Image 1 (cartoon, helix red, strand yellow):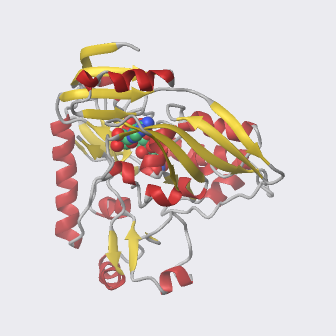
Image 2 (image 1 turned 30 degrees about the vertical axis):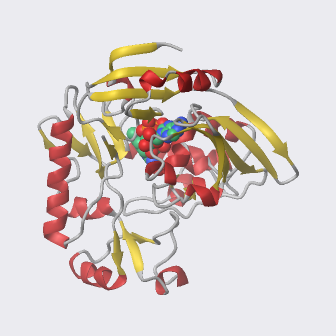
Length: 355
Ligand SMILES: Cc1cc2nc3c(=O)[nH]c(=O)nc-3n(C[C@H](O)[C@H](O)[C@H](O)COP(=O)(O)OP(=O)(O)OC[C@H]3O[C@@H](n4cnc5c(N)ncnc54)[C@H](O)[C@@H]3O)c2cc1C
């Protein structure tokens, strides 16, 4: 295990912001976790990092950044219908999705191409195109940094919410997630309910395949949609969707629809795409609004201020040119937020972890 002082984080955050960590430790072997736990000198002001694809560091980090980069994928249980897979927290999420597809295991194919690690995917409660990690998540192993105790968290203990978990709130940077267990299906059940203002998964699928579609088709169609919407994050600075989709009361939705008649909305819990007359909506008190739609209405799609702009195909995705600073990104995001507040009296909350 190597310890670096005054280490640049530029290659460890997808906005490529050029800040430094006082100490930087990269853990690649599971045994190194206990080695790190003994090094009390480095325990002040810890930040646990995965791939850095949902982080905006605003300034030099005054403590220790510990990057979890452990690798390993093992099937630990199997029956006719399912496999239980145990993954090291530093495994690439997208790599895992491809592993699952190549083995014919379903349940995560719509979440292809989400950057970052498996450990972070669980803390972030990731979702995309109609699939949610919480539907396949079983449990995870952690080590408490202060005590060195190993503790297992199941789904209930994770207190999952919209891009939320206990590790983003009260236990933030107090526990290192070491392994994650995910249950995948052996069936070919697919979800193609995703649709947006401009496209649908079904429409994309019909361009290159014919029913019955399989998980490989789904992953391919999602990849095409994502490549249109998101920049190549390995080259262009971005952290994906910058803001969460705001939750508003149903009566506020009715008011909003007077200004933005076709605005897309979703149920507040998991990411699904029911029709507006679905009981899920009829009996709901709150809905989630497509933040990108509101921003697009206000002219934010493809807009640039200096080195910071939005994707030409999705106004919720902030992108940057080389050399953009965190302050420029935050100031750009503040302007987006102020516009939405002024036009619709809706508060946008960042999805990105601003540190
Ligand atoms: C182009 C692009 C597209 C994206 N699309 C999506 C999408 O479709 N859906 C979606 O949900 N997200 C999306 N994201 C956001 C991001 O990819 C996810 O949030 C991802 O899970 C972050 O993984 P990471 O390893 O980079 O985490 P990081 O950004 O490094 O960390 C995220 C959080 O997890 C914590 N953490 C990380 N690893 C551990 C660990 N081992 N133990 C304890 N805590 C840990 C960190 O402290 C931090 O709070 C996108 C991002 C980009 C750049």
